[in-house]
Each structure stands twice: as C-alpha cells, then as structure tokens.
Length: 207
Length: 236
Image 1 (cartoon, rainbow over the protein chains, first blue to last red):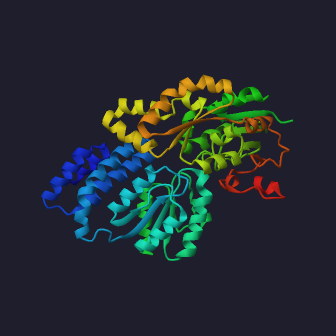
Image 2 (image 1 turned 90 degrees about the vertical axis):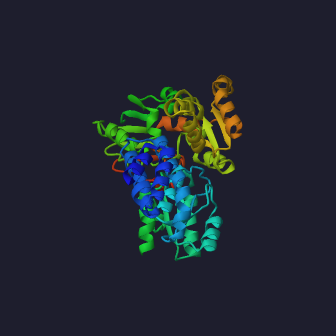
Image 3 (image 1 turned 180 degrees about the horizontal axis):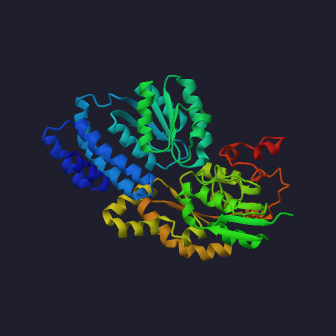
C-alpha cells in the first residue's frame, strides 16, 4: 500500500494518491507512516529524478500537487497526534522575488516532516519575517531566492533577523544561493534543494 | 595583441556579433538559461580548449550563478557585470536595479526569447500537448501567476514596431489569464558595445569585469557595490 502511494506521487496522479491515502486510513494505517513512507518518500524520489535531469519542473510540480492534495486529508489527523511537533518554521521568498515553486516544495516537505509551517508567500519584507517569528514563536526561518538580484536583500534579512532574535535558526536556499553565499551571509544553514531543506530544518532543531 | 574570442549566449548574437572584430565567435544555445548547472562546464571546456592565450568576451551575466567558478586559466576574460541578459539589454546593473525596484513582478519579452519560444504562451501550449488541459492550466498558473507586468524590450522604435505584433498573442494571453499590465521599453546597447570593445585596460567601468589570467569568477563580484575612489577593488 505504501509503495502504491509512493508510486502515485512519483507518477503525479493526484486522484489516485488521494484515493490510496483514504484507503490506507480506512485500513487503520498510521497517518505519520503514510506521510513518511508513502507521500514524502515519493516526493523525495521525484527530487532525486529532478536532480539527475530525468524530471523537469512540470513533472515535479505535478507530483508535489498530488502530495499536497493528500496532505489536506492527512494534516487534521496528524494534528491529533501532535502535528507540528517537529517545530515551527516561517517560510517565504525574500522581497523582490516572486518565484515560489521551490519554496512551495519546501513547505510541503516540511509539513510532511511534521513541522508547523507559517507560509508568508512571496516578496516578503524583513519586518514581516520578524513579526511572524515573534507571533508564532518560530524555531526556524527559511528564506528563499531564485534571482541573484535580491541577494543583498537576503543578506540584510539574515543579519536583521539574527540581531533581533539570536535564537531563531536561519536557513537560506533557492537557485540564487550557494553554500558559500549562505556562509557569507551568516545563515545557520543552506539547502540546495527541497529535501535538503527539510533535512536541514530537522538538523537545526536537533541542535 | 592577444586574439579576441567571443563566447556568448545566443540571445546576444544579433546585438554583439557585428560589433566585435574577433578571431572567433561562438554563441551557445538558449537552453543553458534554464539549466545554469550546465553553463559552467560548457563555458569552461571551451575556454580550456583555446591553446593560445586570448582575450575572451564572455557574453553571460551571473545567470543564476551559471558563471560562478569559471576559471580564466591563461586567458583574460571580459564579462558584463549584470545579473542576466535583461540587465545587459537595459544598459547597466544600475538601470536594471532601478527598473527592478520599481516593478519587481515584471516579465521581460525580448526578440531572442520570443524567437526561442521561452515565453508563457508557447510554454502553455507545450504543457497542453504534454500534460493535458487541466494540468497545463495549473502548471502555467504556478509558473507565471505571480507576475504583474509584461514588458516588451526592443532597441529602436522600428524594432518595437516589428516586434509588437509578434508579442501581441503573448500579451493578450497574459492579460486575459492573469490581468498582467503591459508596457514597452527601448533598451540601451551601451553596455554591449563596451563589452564588444573588450578594452582590457578598463578598470573604472562598474558594469564590466576584466579578469586577468589565473582568476576565478565569484558571485561576490556581482554583488559588491563599486567602491568609491577605488574602482579596481570592485573588479578583482
């Protein structure tokens, strides 16, 4: 059953994914297991196919969409067992950057990993990150950028968030960012793709 | 005098090719734009294959970090210090920064990108063929739904007149679908002209990087503000 869910996500068949998840739940399967070993595992495989150049952006989006539709059913059930238990992450693309495909993938995988995600969307000014971190008592903030044009704004955001709240972990990512950029900006971590971002958030929580 | 070589994106060919007097010119396919990871190996292998120390015009911007890590080897490189070809076509990093700050959600249409089919309407048609109508609708909205304005870029009024009808179906598609505004802008070939001169003695042009042999391109070179009074430091 879990393998079938995984395959449905990899194939990007949203209707089948939702149907299989419903069947699995009716059969009494644990929602977190369905998420981890079915949905997330499938989307991670899609990420690997993308990295290898076998999948392109559209295929990845179709698969992410399938997982998101299934997550709508799963999330309330996870909540019963402590959804968001992994921590709270504030996510958004930095001011000036409206490209949210990568950011949305990260949000989906973070939710799959058990995080409560506050998604601020695109074009997020620094004050908005800081306000959301305070309001939701966030553990991690993720700042994304596709365009290198906005990197100076990202650097300012990292600096100001760190100055305002030294305890919050700042992770950066997106095509504009390299590991060297992340270091230079003083971020706590950098991820080159969505699954690395979800793993990074878990690592940052661990210490 | 070292031989002059051009290695540039196809999108620059009509703007650069007849402005330079080069021993050789090669224009690489549009595809590297969407696959920046392939840009560095494509450029590096061509640089490395030039046995004679040369002055090489690299007709690429930072382009999603596609040029980061490029090693000049025994050559001298001249690069436009812009984030991408839109910056080059607007004439400077500063012009682009100004336009970007005013309207970050602007999608630029140029002759090159219209011809190569790298625009929302062609992409949408491709998705419909490949993934069916329903998925194509969702995909195209995810890819372009955040843009608020479409801007047609040409280099003269005549070219604008000529391009306008070619761009019209794209403009109509984006307006109907996402209510995108539309405007037109005449570009500035000044930077491309200076690039074509490949004057390696230039040290005070904030829009060009002149990299001597043994230098590696870094992202930082594109992010630094040119330092007042010591323009060299911004370049090296």
